[in-house]
Length: 100
Image (cartoon, rainbow, N blue to C red; front, side, top):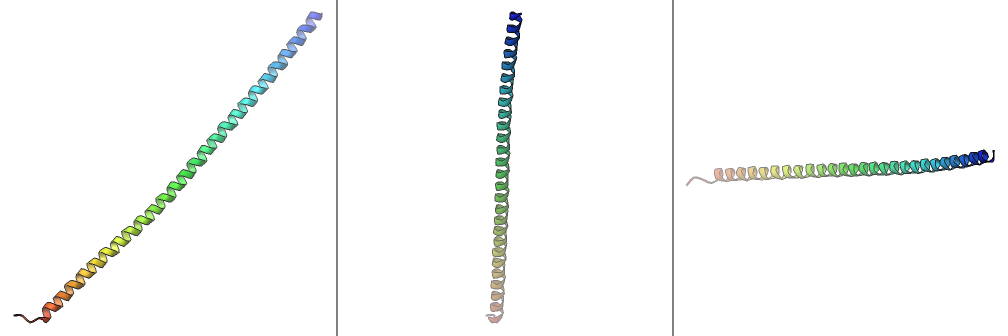
């Protein structure tokens, strides 16, 4: 009978130890999972931030490009106008001068 009680105590201790180890293992697994999810969330947030910055940079570059194109068009039109005015002045001078 003593052996059986001893055996039962050993079995109970073994089961307690096993339950404690299982609880520890589950706690570690949960901590690992929590860390993994936090890292993934940080990666996603960093990616979103990079994408936002790239979008803003692209938008600014497009605005600058449009401004450069408009300035180029205006400069071209100003040159064309100056050329046309110069031609008109030459024509008027040619009309005023008597033929020789």
